[in-house]
Image 1 (cartoon, rainbow, N blue to C red):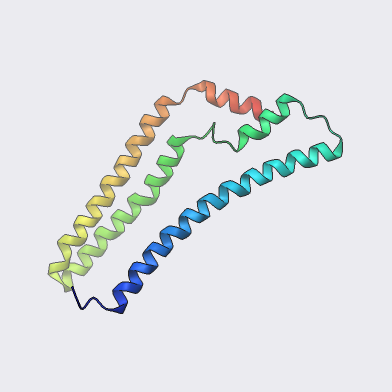
Image 2: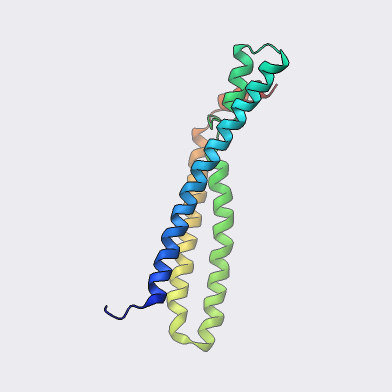
Length: 144
């Protein structure tokens, strides 16, 4: 453990820097969305247009996540992960021709990704059953 070296330290620093950057970006995105809502309300007020409760609710509900469809998010995630699992399995087979010791670990990683993708598909079907038709009609009414 005494001879870890500079490369391992830089790799650890890069990893934690990435985690910090992703966290800050998520917070920054939320702040920018809120600022955009406030800017829209400010412009409506400056233009002299009446801002009734219905207009305010429409604006705040569109970006609040109330109508977020998790079933669609899960399905899109599965449709990204499953092809990667297939590609990784093909890579394991090709790599296994040259380096037989590498075949099983890479196939294991492909199997893990396939399980994740299938889990997201299952979660999508479960979340779709949880969604009621009321949410869609509410969203359509807000968009009108």
